Length: 316
Image (cartoon, rainbow, N blue to C red):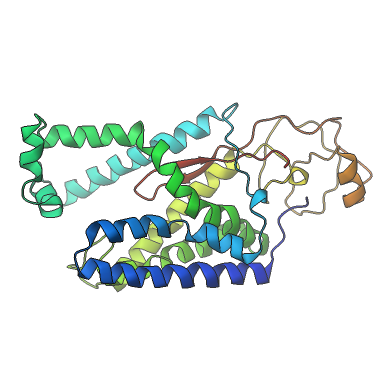
């Protein structure tokens, strides 16, 4: 398989299906929210996370090109960064916020009571758990088992955003431009929720909902860059072995003497005879076998659930 090539029709089909289905679902969520159907709308929002995956399928893109098999060998550093950095970034953000707004710091549990009911703190205390201990348990869970659980939800979005859309955008634009466009699109996908139910920020702030929508796009651009960087950081396969990203680079693949057609290709796993016939390239890498380095770890999903997706780049 050659490097990712921008497919205009597939990309537009993906956007139409992904936004159309998600916006209809978000309208239904708003109705449930207004009628106090808390559990129902939360379950529907969880299901909505699979809409980008569905959009990828409906666009005609082959899902097998994304890569699904987890690979751990050789990817310890990117995995640890993906697993732990959400907690670190959240802690830094919280510290900065409460330094600026110390009056907002609540260690009494009033904020929990306003969300989960007035008896929430009393129920915790009846179990011998104080509110500060509850916070510590929550933080500990976010570092240990929560990412392993949330990966199954996050894969629905990541298959669409980092699995399909970002590679398509990077095939059309420069990497930085693709990051910005992709992040804005990702943020816009959530806009109805922000405007209809105050998703993430509530509704009692200046400039609601426009400023909330803008702020969310800033966040999704930043998190999209980190996610895509982690994806490419562990990329150890060449284009010819079905890598998804055009700018994947790695060391230790042998002395490459191939003039690849990709303008930004710096690695080449091009010893397979069928690839030689397909690409028509006469000079090949000094390696006699395909690269054996482990596949990229993954895509970091910071979406307040901090889920990790480990992607294989082996040839399927």
